[in-house]
Image (cartoon, rainbow, N blue to C red; front, side, top):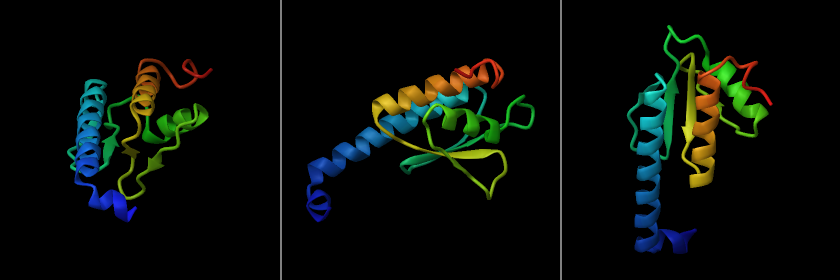
Length: 110
């Protein structure tokens, strides 16, 4: 770990990767009508608007059934804390959230 911290090129690569996917996920989630809190970290906070037919809890349960472990954000009801992952994980996550938001949780289950 200490060697990685001392490797500036590696750190720059990680920061760039994280920023790219954080921005991409923010845009994708916002396009689905979700509230995304601006972030400069390796995670984003996503809120489900009160007018949404779905809740963060329902989405979290759906994602868990599909192998994605997401943290509910207990301090803010109806929010999820999403960590930035690999490209494959990020794209898979967005695909599942899109499926969830475009149907009912029962319709999108496998």
